[in-house]
Amino acid sequence: MDALNTYFNSYTIVGVFLVIGILLPLVAWGIGALVQPHEPNEEKEKTYESGLDPFHEATVKFHVRYYHIAILFVIFDVETIFLYPWAVAYDKLGLFALIEMLIFVTLLLIGLLYAWKKKVLKWM
Image (cartoon, rainbow, N blue to C red; front, top):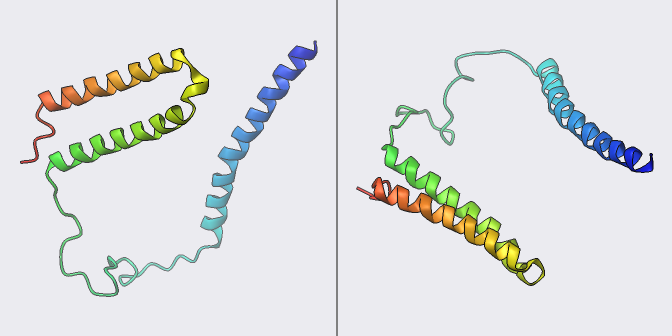
């Protein structure tokens, strides 16, 4: 019975944090909607460009290749975030963690080779 009680207490804490995590932004959003002044006018709806009147269109079209490069950068940047703690704690983790990390890096290399084959990495 004691193990079952501990089990439910653990999930109760998770549930409380989940409810707080959902309610806190909703309450803040609701309070903001109630207390904010709402007086729309043409001056407030203008695009702000360092205090100057805008003289170009706000939307600029970029080639889709820039987005591919940005996504690949984010993927490999996140990879380093995962590799650093593993490298620091490698002595404690053992062979199993080495195999896990090799699988992880292999999957990333497969993704890189796929992007290379599809010529996503070609700049122009």
